[in-house]
Length: 182
Image 1 (tube, rainbow, N blue to C red):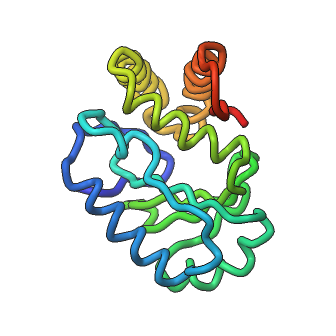
Image 2: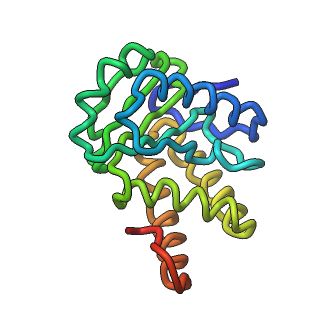
């Protein structure tokens, strides 16, 4: 089942339907926003096969400039999203879909190539490529979900150090190409 009540944290076992849920939403967003989007990706734990996750599809949408969100707002409203703006002062623009009792999608608008873009996509890619990191992250999330069951902002903030540490370790060991932190 897809969806989670506002402010709550509950992890569920991986659902093989999540990629299809993402693809269907990606098609709707691309049809509505077309040329505004530079790139769109499925991120977060629902994008990692086998990983327990909050049953909410996280989508990161890259724009040339974050100011371009204003041109996308009405189309996102038309798709059933509500704008939360720069929620939690993370430097992106968050749209959510679903009711307060059943939030189903989070769409994070960022600038292509920005630190936020590189963090969302880079951490997903690290989880996909590193089985040991996946296990460590799953255990970390499980502990935090118990601690922050009714405090989603607290849960998200508590994961940040783990994510940045994983990306920092990758940055130190990567020898060529663009690093994940921009």
